[in-house]
Length: 301
Image (tube, rainbow, N blue to C red; front, side, top):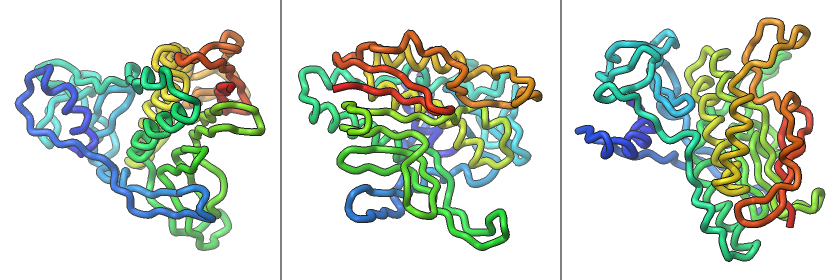
């Protein structure tokens, strides 16, 4: 059982009175790059345990054992001695173990009574550990589409005075991640702007590599925690659930997706009209904007 699996196990083992020895795991920082002293680009070893099959992968709250062929086992005992049910979920005493996904708390009541600067500091403080443990692949060394040898850096997360982000694949140290939160963005006149990309756990079904499966499966947790940290646990739960109920479905499209392949969140197909001029849990106004297949949550000052 991999170390990330043990982390969530620790949260439920006591309640289930499971006699298991469990240890927690946090990704180790392996490299930090700081161009111009403005923003830190940080690599971690969060991919450890997912480099090859077989491995355990958390998917929307439940843990699945993928065998050496990349297929998850069902209704059996895994080679490392754990039980999975007919749906493939890891179970203890017949009970599927859930890691709290969908009900994560970012404890945003901490923002109450705080100044804007204090709220931003707390928000960033809450998100950095989440992004540090995000499952990101290792660097790439090999040919590009034209056959030229290239090096591509994979950064787990980064932060600066007014930004925190996760998942940046770059060879030029430019741009920020698939999910990013910026503070005092003068382009939009916002307190914070949350940029959320289209990636969702359904893409896991398209992947053959273990690290890719784990990478996409992890996206739902990252986005849930980001949304809640930015606008509050209560209203964030409402928004996340709205996005999730649509993202979990494949949107039929005879022209662009005739084979009903996994399509991510697909924000362009969602109706966010009810998400304009809403209130965060800490009293600020926010609205949602869709650009292409990306979501922006704009929290105003």
